[in-house]
Image 1: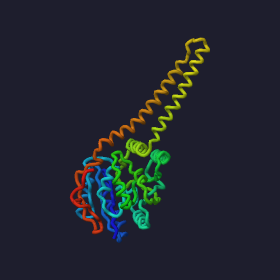
Image 2: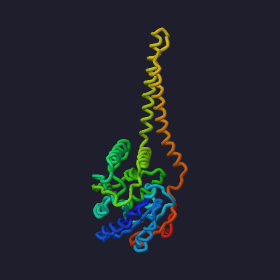
Image 3: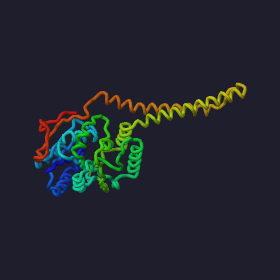
Image 4: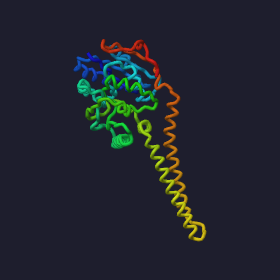
Length: 329
């Protein structure tokens, strides 16, 4: 009997957790040939989400809980869960039920056929504004065009990962994480499972446009140096244009007998343009330097305040000493 972990990163999902658990139980009953465990990772919730999971764990010994010491972000919360998972496969799914658990049997079937990364690919995104859908579509297109690794479009974190994929992802310990790109970076045999995304069952999204924009910048700067190359090219083009314009001014002044050249507005336009290009280039360089600064400090990617591991089936392998705690990483 093969074992599968259901990894659920959560932040303030108290309103939907009981419904999520009931829905998952109905789905897993149709898969009696596999040993399942639940692995909830609480990313600094303030609404009692961890208490609900503790209550569920008193009735279901398969439930494990990892509580982070504060809100580290979903990307790091997923890594915390992957560090604990010791099963043959891991399914990452959000508790809001936008990603339908009904896809899990098909994911398991494709996994049994030899696919190591079965990712759910969105055909539609119900409950999201036109602006969010458009910006998400544009982001995937940009990331796909600048990255040297093929990035799955319209794909979130909902996926089944084989044990080999999980072990590979554990080796990437950078603090500024973009898991969607890391899933592609590790490779292995991948297959898409199209689906229509539902609206949230309860609560609201934890990703505002500011957080999404930061995630987009992290994805681009973490997986390509193209912005630096473009800044260099733009700087060379502007420098050549400025040098040519300088020659034109000198020649014109010489032909006019050395008279002063009128053109204050055009001069200011050139100065402001050059200043804007310089600031833009410095901003791009600063983004990369900031990431170098963060990585060189080698701080822990996350810290845990509580780890409660359940009692999964006999086929689940637990590392020595992991029944009480895991190391902060």
